[in-house]
Image (tube, rainbow, N blue to C red; front, side):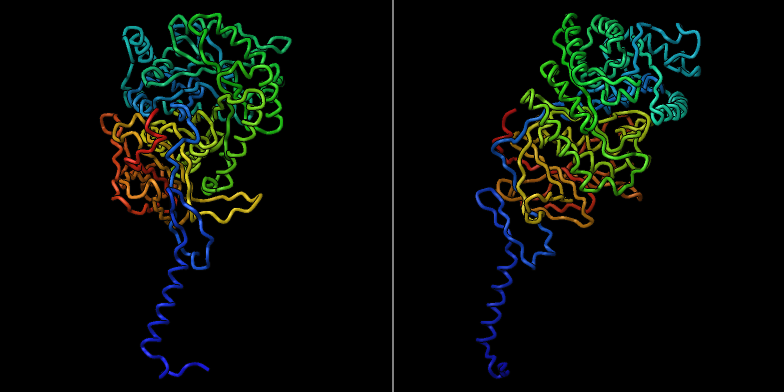
Length: 584
């Protein structure tokens, strides 16, 4: 029998209300920080709508320390073919490259193995007809004059090219782009000639930008016994040594594809012997007797590629200073915008890294491993996709995942080039991935920290890979950034959810001042925009050709971080006094 209304005295009503409040409070207290750590508590049915994430970081010891040049860039030799090499002295390009220093610049790619060196000072006047540099007659004289100024001027040769000259070059590059694409899709490449003057221009760009050049040598020149023919390389080494150019070296590009390029395969053992031969050649030249050598620049670790790497490591594991490989996520010809947000695609890199490291550690434990070429798509990217804000999710996740798994250097293909997967477009304007890279360089240091979170993962099950759409990485803040004292921590967060997420800093991060750098698409195109805004301000280069100041938005201590949907954010937690971050 239910109680009659007369039985519900005020005392009994108060007792029922109190009991109800106790039940509610016990069901909503899901996580408790203790001793600087966050411990998950089993979910209850009342937590389904909860969006709060508790976050703490281990500030005592780093889990990894990567290179100071961790984020580096690449230039493809095709810039010789399409004429852009002659514009590397552009003040705007050099300013953009300086923003990413310190870094390596790898001069290599698909056409590395078709590159030939000729010690010619002035190809515009020495050739009888159209030569490999393809100078347009409209500005050939201007190019020659800039060559002369390079001889006369000490230090950096920086140019301000007229708009008319740039427009002519863009037209020429667009025509050459079709030729290059045809070569790529047919997998047949024409030879490229790098002259002494072109090498001077390349090194001028690298030196003025504060980068270190890694030059890829042609490995497809073979003797009758399939050994490497180094005769053409010796001329390049002697010229570079005479100019005292500080260069590191590599040999070939994706040797696992050589059979398809010239119907002549090179196995891992032979490739290892080629690297030993190159090392001996470098040691015979005083300038390069201690130069670094990297390789073998293999492709994605499929079975045949791992067999090649195994054979290479047996012979040349101790010869190279770091083992390099390349990774591309999707086919740019068929890519869709949603591909850049698939957690399965983002997680694909992790397994590839483990496969490479397993082979390397079998022969040379502790040998550094580099991701020597990476981009979202292959096939030169896709217009309005791989050059947009959406591609930034893959790029930043690549950096975070690689650092966490011990990859020492990640080289982005490409800094500037034709196609759509670069950091800077042909108007010398920075694209979204450039701004992500710039923020990473300015805020993220080489020491990687362990992140502890609660509230975003399901209960782990054996054999089940948990894929989250909220990615959180932590490093010590860059020592080069004098706006923050040592001991500060930088978080970078990717929110792939279509709803905002709230993050509460706990443990050692609790009640600290936080500087927010929220990077969002700018304009009406949404995540397919080629422009970005930082904390609501449109990011563009200043009129005088300099980079804008990256201004943070200070958040009051204890405030919950709110991450908007489909957004990337960097957060510097100030004055944490993290033991792991006090010293370099």
